[in-house]
Image (cartoon, rainbow, N blue to C red; front, side, top):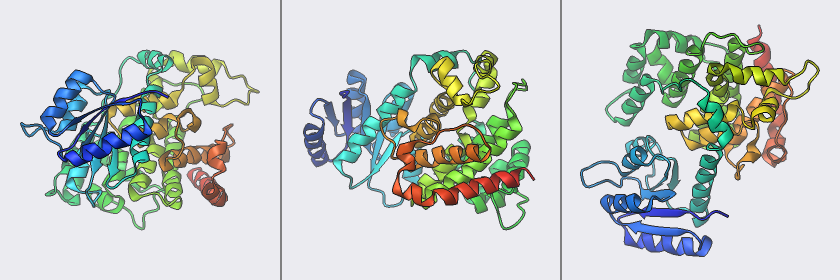
Length: 401
């Protein structure tokens, strides 16, 4: 088991004593350092370059700067975990921290939860830095940037003075984005009770998290290059991703996941195949993979990818989302939606929902795909599996009308 180094930043010295006892008891091989102020924390981070920083929600530097945003800028590879006593998960402070933190833990928490969060985040980073993936991504001429509109939406969400109406006004300034989002929200898979004719109404009906997902989704799909790759249909990929978002969110809800996890499942379902779009800029990749699949071959496209490159579009897409700073739960679900067991931890409702949504839709479309047996054997999954299977088949049938 790998030993990690951690800097804990908290103005309460008693919390330090608790963290020290926790690490000594559960991971005695780890090294830890403690800081009472943001400045002290930054000094220790500069000298120690730890694997992880664990800090109070509103830990600031002496100039009023945000500790996590500074660490994100200077040392983006360091894992950043927020400890929050905020009772409201949608508070301004929490929303602001989503810009720079990888993971959140609400107080009070069990010691094992903190250990798991550190090890889980480290596992994901190791997974996205494998040489094969770096080589494949290196063959892409450029990596698209996060939509400017997304940045503006995030800034608006942070402000307690901005209303949903005003957020809709931000989207309305981009005519192309507005047109595409309205086209999408009025499609059958959202099942809204009435026709939506403006982005302001769309924001109110769908919520800001879904709108943020759609902004990323529309940017990626409509920025896709025009190259025609045999066997790859952008329209079909669009439809599959749209349906996966809806199925994943429903699965997360049925698994009694939190509202935040349900929204993240929607986002992961929406974006799980973005690696296929990204790799359109790397035609040699597609040609080598497709040439390895014979007409009577039963292996899936992703199996062929792993056979040829030891990595796949799943990891490539997650790599991009990781660079964009999307939540780790979404990044890991995208990275492992074909092979959840490649991560040490397979207990995330977002990962489970995304994997199942993709499998159910592929099976309904008669595509070769394998379900993870650990996930399938979960009692709550077995109980609902047939219901989800019917929903996926129904959505697929409706999409073809």
